[in-house]
Length: 130
Image 1 (cartoon, rainbow, N blue to C red):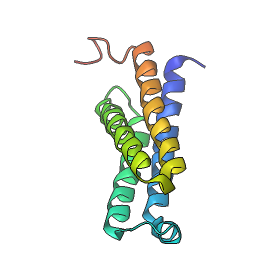
Image 2: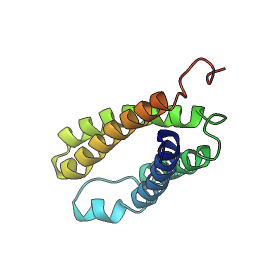
Image 3: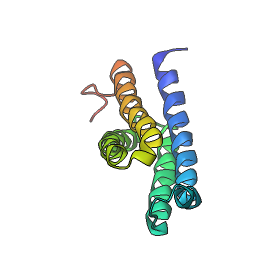
Image 4: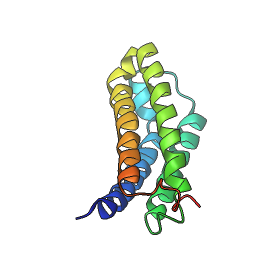
């Protein structure tokens, strides 16, 4: 399998993971109540839906990556920023440390891996960015 085919599979897989994580976050309020962490359902629902829809867009971009390259780029930026937020919240909310720390690691490493695959596949060349 060449790098470009692997990249497309990886982007679609990442999209599916985002959808799954988004759905999990939508229904995380009962877990937060058990852990006695204040919860505001609007946050879980809006963030979960945003993550799920980002996942749908990311998965869709795999159909024509050159045409929809902006979607993985936005996803990369979103997840790198999100990893910083997750790390901050993990350090200030000890009960959530294992969940958010693992999420922060994933949200930091996965976009960097995607960038590497995009570079190696030539998607950031001048010809592809026109």
